[in-house]
Image (cartoon, rainbow, N blue to C red; front, top):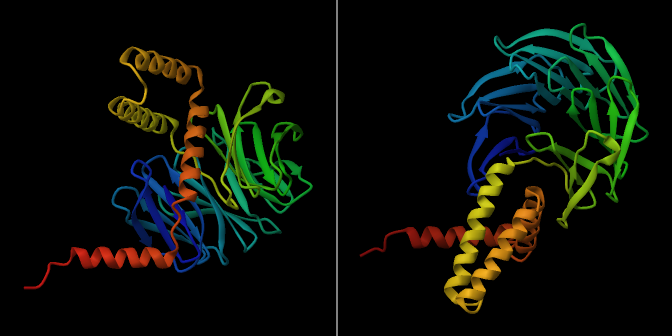
Length: 334
């Protein structure tokens, strides 16, 4: 996982160990947008008016796209990986040939765009302004529809080639048809503005983060009126962004933790006689099988959030702890 900040750095984290593994330094301005393409490249957009292309693994900056005259607010990679789109405070949209690093074309938008995103097949893209979303046809670059939202837009996400989810200062998510330009349904449940949307691999689960501090998991359905919220985590924080780690890796991690917990209980003898313990373990296994994977994941996240609240450290205490570790690591003199 990668995170960007106003400190001009990009920090990398290993989600298997939950530890920071490094920092990328190249930009000379705040990092506004980060997006991975498969597991090969990372793209970063910055206030320094450039987009950097990083090679995953070596983490070298292999190219820097320059051309915008103001901070770049968002960058989107075509599903083929050969084309990119960027929007900027200079009120333009630029298309980039990612094979050569050259600008393919520049389009004047007339107003500042905050977001841009391709659909799954790459034949359509959406550009979000303050309260309007323009749906473009990739082939001709012409606007197909203009979608109007009554409040400021904060996030957009294609759920299907022709269905766009929109989060705004409203306390609900709106799903729009990009073929007809109409609202298909509203997903209600949050009590404050929706700040971020992310979809799990497979396209069956949608996650949303809100300023109310809640992360919600929605089960998608072919009938959009049957989309339901199946789990909620209250983080107690003012959420600004959201990303999803592959459910398969999370589930394998949870299974390892569950096995470790059952082994500890068996060793301590807290479950009573062996026959009774085996019966209870069997019941627990059946219960876990009946629960959807996403529900088990969200429950585990709740436990981690609750545990982290009791283990929070201030920056000063972390510095003191690091100093103590350095002193202990030094060989004693004499």
